[in-house]
Amino acid sequence: MSSNQTSTKSISLSIELRNDDQLSTEDLDQMTRLMQDEIEEHIDIQSIQLSPGGQPIPEGTKAAGEAVTIGMLLLQVLPATLPALMSFFQEWTLRPGNRPVKIKTQVQDRSIEVEFDPRVSSADEIAALTQKFQTMLTEKPEDSHG
Image 1 (cartoon, rainbow, N blue to C red):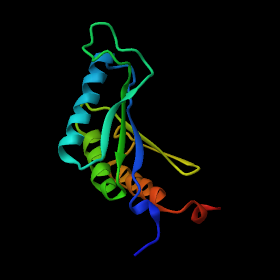
Image 2 (cartoon, rainbow, N blue to C red):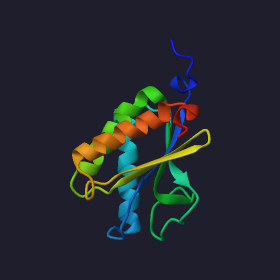
Image 3 (cartoon, helix red, strand yellow):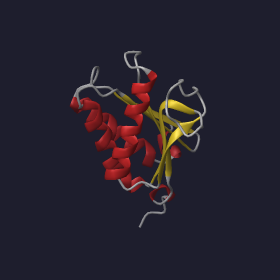
Image 4 (cartoon, rainbow, N blue to C red):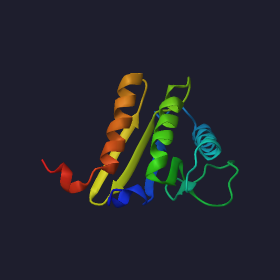
């Protein structure tokens, strides 16, 4: 048994669907909500929500009166869930028409960010990014001095 506390502590992740202005804000919002639904349906996570604040909801968009950042989700996950979640993001970005995904998190004093973009990365490169992200989340900061 390891004394590494990251094995039971939840991890907060910020998920951003990248938009290169080819999608309307309504389409980006719809795609973000679709991603949220798919994650909730297929992956055992602690919580997921649309990111509050940021851009106002465009006029005519159906919303519950709260401002959200279009294209962003906030997740709380256990480390054991990361492989399934990363696999989901790999698969998501490789689907035709889907947007690249940027994942950000803060682990103690380190900010970790990775972007899945099949337009600039091969499937093998995305798999390597996934492994690197998981390793960075689980390594102790004192192990990474260099």
